[in-house]
Amino acid sequence: MKRKHVLAVASVIGGAILVGCATYTTPTREETLQVVNSSFRDRGIAKLDRLKQSDTQIACSEAALTGKELPKDVSARLEKAALATVKYPADGAYLGDFKQGERIAQTGVGLQWSDTDKTVAGGNCYACHELTSQELAFGNIGPSLKGYGKLRGNSKEVVSYTWGKLWNSHAFNACSQMPRYGDANILTTAQLKDVMALLLDPNSPVNK
Ligand code: HEC
Image (cartoon, rainbow, N blue to C red; front, side, top):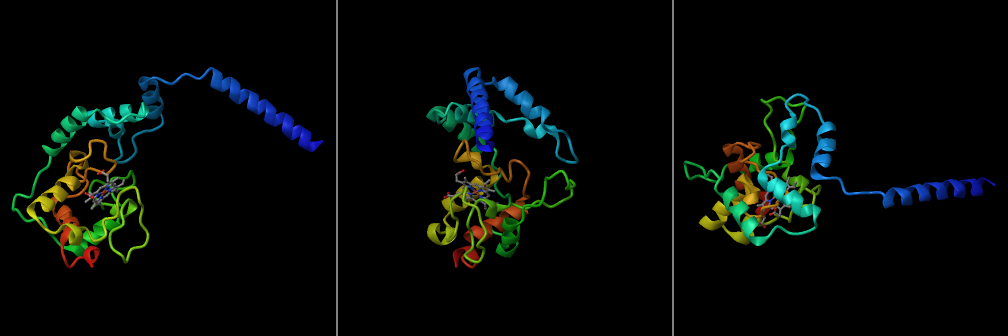
């Protein structure tokens, strides 16, 4: 008896879902943005302007919606523009302190509504990357960076590529999911140097 009742309910729900599917139309970009915008509000330092997409983000979102890659000429143009935003260290020194770099890679503090504009932000690299062998808790959205400097060396090209990638990840992959640490003012130049040392200093635990 009870089972029959459950079945009846299930079939009503099934019917409702089918009817729902039959009348579904893909929302327009404006409708989607309206829903997204109305779901958030300003709170502390986290303001609604964060929802405003850059031209690159708009192009990448549109491409993702249609399940297509960006056309080659478009991604090349966006990457070139991103590369032009990179500010290289004026003193020509790229490597700071790898111990500080490890702290920055470990912490995800900063830029949240509960922080202030004085809070020193971290890089949260481990959320997406493996780095040292000692740290076993890491995400895998990004590739493993274990042995980064040992595998690639310290040539001028490697150093300036790595700096550029950290400053504005879109410079080498238009639709990168990696934060733009310099371009979006997440990390300071001094912090970026410490993270560079974590990746490239031969004595860094990343390269041991
Ligand atoms: C939200 C996830 C995410 C975070 C956080 C993140 N990355 Fe990445 N990173 C990626 C992804 C995904 C890639 C590979 C695809 C690409 O190029 O965007 C990548 C690529 C890289 C590369 C290039 C690797 C190569 O083989 O050339 C470096 C270097 C790098 N990340 C360093 C870092 C450092 C250092 C941090 C912290 C300061 C960091 N990433 C934080 C997602 C992330």
